[in-house]
Length: 250
Ligand code: XBP
Ligand code: MG
Image 1 (spheres, rainbow, N blue to C red):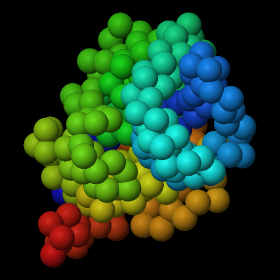
Image 2: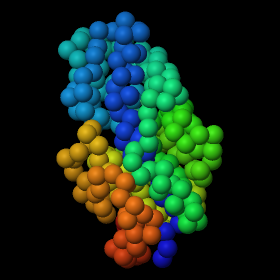
Image 3: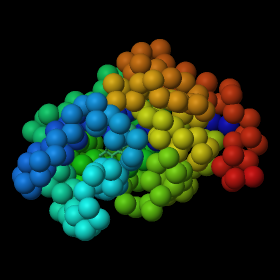
Image 4: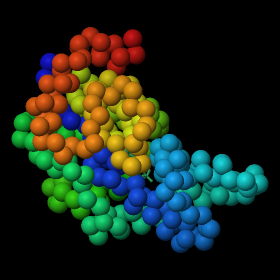
């Protein structure tokens, strides 16, 4: 059983983006006249909720405001998130975000070894496009056979839907793919979809419960843990029938 594809999460995995997301949220709050400000500690806790719109709704629900005020704020979420996305993509396009160590090397190595690349992310397509173009150049998007992201699935991570969408679109079974993630929600999503998963935590996710992950690394910088070694580890520990049973909910 060989590995045919690497499926990458985006935020925290390809690049350590959450500080920029946090800044973009605060710029949107200021632009739209809200006296909210998410400091690092609060944002780290809010990251338990995947999806920027869902995160805003969870924050509003936790406010001490009246029901009518909360309803009014919920109605502003689309406008708020659009403003936040505009600030985020502006920063990304201006080169404000770099790929994490070892990411570009692993992407090139995988393509050179004939593997396919895909993305399975909770963020929006416009954020991913801005990040990939700014960090990988004009050919960045075409490196990936599939970019599964954002609202393409109803149930976001930790649900397996986004990984299943990426695999189904590629026609690759989970036992022939490796996921690369940064967060507990991401690991739960990838593992539930049947993928052997590598985790590279950041400040925003370190110390989380990565149960089910195949390997936890500080980053992808260690070239000795390249495509060949990751493939060897993935195929050494997953008897095909066990993975298939997991994937098909048996
Ligand atoms: C991480 C997320 C996203 C980002 C914010 O996505 O949960 O919501 O925090 O981006 P990933 P949006 O699956 O790539 O780790 O505001 O566009 O949701
Ligand atoms: Mg992530």
